[in-house]
Image 1: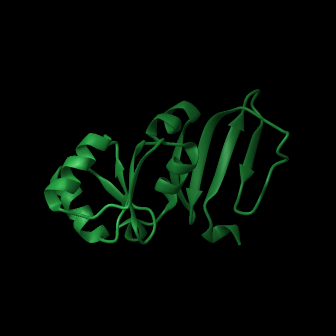
Image 2 (image 1 turned 180 degrees about the vertical axis):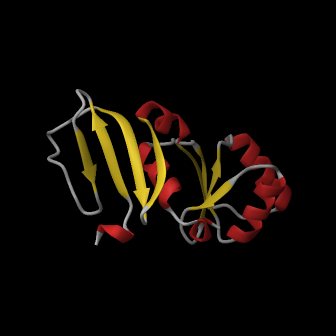
Image 3 (image 1 turned 180 degrees about the horizontal axis):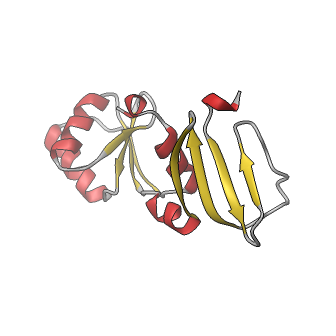
Length: 137
């Protein structure tokens, strides 16, 4: 069953190791620091890195909700801003500032319903590494 699902494997402080698969939950009151993370997706090693390195790769960005994601994507890409889809009406401008996104939106004349900062989290990094590229386009 786990063969087709992403798996996170951690080396905990003190040398212990553990793995977490989909649907597995740890007791909320238990916190165990992790030194190193290994992510395997569909039998393929995605990354093996210190937690600090994975945390710095979690890119912050600007989330924009619009009825015209195709035009917004084109405008942001033309402005040199990397983008990911975040739902049917949301785009995340990766590593961008609200000012840069606002200029691209205004230049393209795209209607925007909402624009907010999104901080990068470890979950964002995990999803970025394990979501197939065709889904993010």
